[in-house]
Length: 440
Ligand code: AMP
Image 1: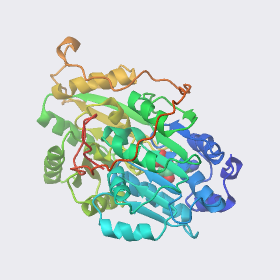
Image 2: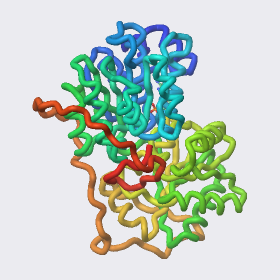
Image 3: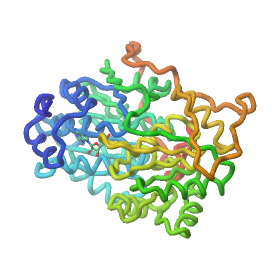
């Protein structure tokens, strides 16, 4: 199948061919014609399966081919939960619109507000944004959404997890005209909060559920190892990093402090690593990601700030030095490898403190998740009896695919109230369901 078979213009197909992309992936084959036909979409498909182009292609084509509703307001707004992910979406968009007169801007937290106002005055067709800063511009009226044609949420569940529900409501209200089309994408959309949101945002959406959130990823080999304590985890880590098949590697820890500590420890043993944590300045965060994507160093140590969306095909290994508290984040973390058809390895270290998370992940994935051992580094720890572990509350409802949407009830409209910007937009958020927005 070719992109033109999906209704994509030959100019865009040629642009993709320059990037070596010739055949649509599954999600693209399903989502592109559906979006081009004007439907709202609720789409879930695996990490690394080509979701970004699945929404960018119809969006660019619409701007290229259809008349604008408004000359001044942006035509397409793409909202992503983190600055890194928004930057990545923006980079792909720039490649697609190269050589056209389509204008796009990126609006991220941590960057100069006035520069963003100037960029918005230039009447861009596309705005790619993180939700907190976007809400600031909406409150200050430096951005109007009354002419918005296409609203896209990438990793919508993470946007909610980070506490940006009010910002989403504001965007929805300000861009609420009958011609608006809305697309919602993620690898893990099937939880109750997302359902509630989608009922408000989407009109008669087409559901494209290509895989359940908890389905095994055939390109990622998952292996778990028991560990007794921190030193034991470090010894296991050193053993893994010394293996010949390790290319670039992302190591996830529970907290920011752990990223720096582990990075120092690895550097002292001559493993070239860098810690990426949410409390760094935006430009430092981008510098680190840029250097890692150029393969200037082999090991990136981070928290869940980098668990979503990052797309670096040279990452052969993801190592969970600590397990994430919530199972969806496990799916996203390991999805940093095994992307675009490449094979990847996900190694997880499970100590006494990780046991509750291990049980939650095991139950979410509906998989036995047995343990492997390393000769000479076998753990004495054998796990904790289930009764003695405080369970992590499930955040998911039962996994269903292609479920019908309940009918929307017409609700009286409230005027949009100003939304306060997040207090600390740079924090790490390994936990879910925080009351206040913490990070973007
Ligand atoms: P995504 O899931 O959107 O982050 O995409 C994962 C990776 O797959 C990115 O590196 C994309 O450039 C790549 N990709 C997306 N679509 C295709 C395609 N149709 N053929 C080959 N690679 C693709």
